[in-house]
Image (cartoon, rainbow, N blue to C red; front, top):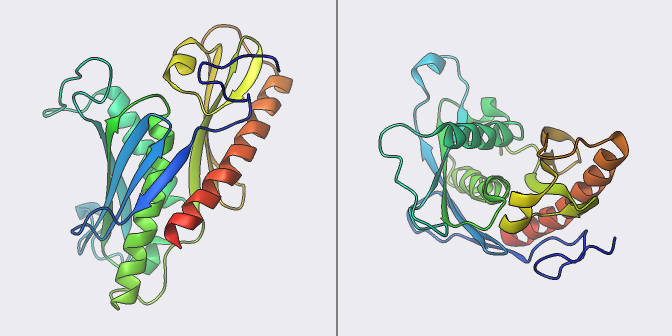
Length: 238
């Protein structure tokens, strides 16, 4: 475990993470999440309608959109004004799946919560930060419509957060920043509920294949980091 990381962190140390709730006076729920140099604005909007294919079934829906501002990275990226890229579609579907896994949509009635995640500064782990921040925005939106009598019971059944882990120079490391993400031998994104159940595991050997022991090391790091993220979420919602 003698690996020296680019920002001086220990192998199992997550980046400094801060979640600022209620940053918007308009959205039913909102949060700014800062994970090291990565910053994402998450806005949850409640709409009294559902997609056409869900009408008259009595269920609600939770979905998400994700985007990166043009100068959120070292070089300008184009706005996706026409059709989202494959990467963008994959990430926003991941965010939507992750949020729906912790919501009882029947308790929403026929209404939809739309969570927009906009990356204003990227330094690795934007999808994980988006999920972690989106949960806070979603929980705040549900709290608001519960308090005003729109719904009669909170649909939130668990927390959800996400973290990246990987292998660098043969060492398992937690919460990869951009320089680590771009050179890691293995890159893995872990999405979990507050009770420790997995929602999604995305793991890829970018260079050398990894074995079961290394995977277990990365999962253990993810578990440790996620516990810290859940505590940060709870403090933001308190």
